[in-house]
Image (tube, rainbow, N blue to C red; front, side, top):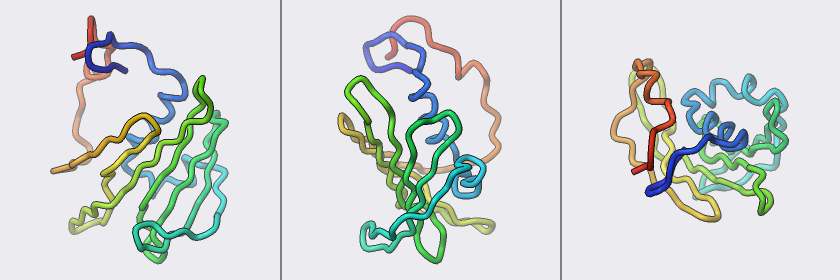
Length: 146
């Protein structure tokens, strides 16, 4: 992991777990596999849309995640995950509001990620599945991150 002007560093287990969850494009299809302990919560409204609330625990992760799915359609609308930090439990909320449609599937793409210390807005122009990625992309960069 790296930030502008700082050298790259190894991710903590909490950061690595969060990143693996963020990178899971098939999250709605793999909920039971990723969250073996999945419980239904109270319905909530997000941006005028009634959502089913699911609370999930992952193996080896002491803190749970909250997933909000659009009722009747099952599309993921919001995920709230928590990480332990020296300052306490740190929430990150990811809102999925852009719907991508093609002939085979309908899926939500993440647009906004919000944490206490930052907000990140994503604009995804194109998403492709099963694209080969060179293993070198995952190596820790030498020197300062730019």
